Image (cartoon, rainbow, N blue to C red; front, top):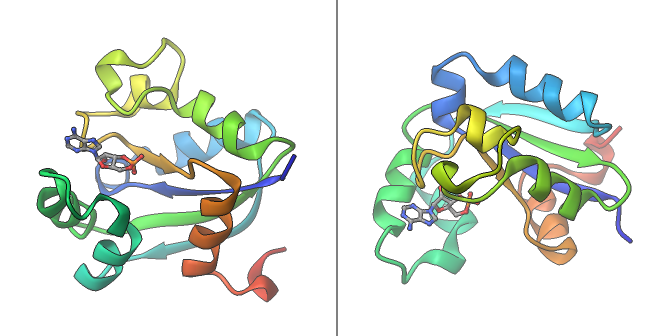
Amino acid sequence: MANRTFTIIKPDSVRKGNFGKIISRLESEGFRILGLKKVSLSTKQAQGFYAVHSERPFYPDLVKYMTSGPVYVAALEKEGAVPALRKLMGATDPSKADAGTIRKEFGESIEQNAIHGSDSDENAAIEIGFFFAESELL
Ligand code: CMP
């Protein structure tokens, strides 16, 4: 099982001062932070990152939201990292997320849902490569 995943601590989390609390949850669940950057996504970057959703009705708003303020992007390591992070995040819609999950605690709405996590090992590798060179992963 691959050991890496990728996360974005989204603009709503950064705005509300929840970055530290979310990173702390990740660390206490055993994720090692291989790389971490604070970035302001350009419209092009957000469109490219979420290109798989480009035909969905929520895509224009999603791009607007993801460029509305700085985010933190991080490459994480843990055994079975992809499913482990998805479990810790909870359902996309925070109102449907299980108690104790990050989205339940910090998410605002189905769009402003606090955190992104890769949905497969293949996408984790692509998403990490979007923001990090291998030499930046320590
Ligand atoms: P994420 O896991 O980053 O992947 C795609 C994002 O699109 C998702 O989190 C939400 O921020 C957003 N999203 C997914 N479904 C919807 C929806 N039905 N309405 C609005 N935004 C959505």
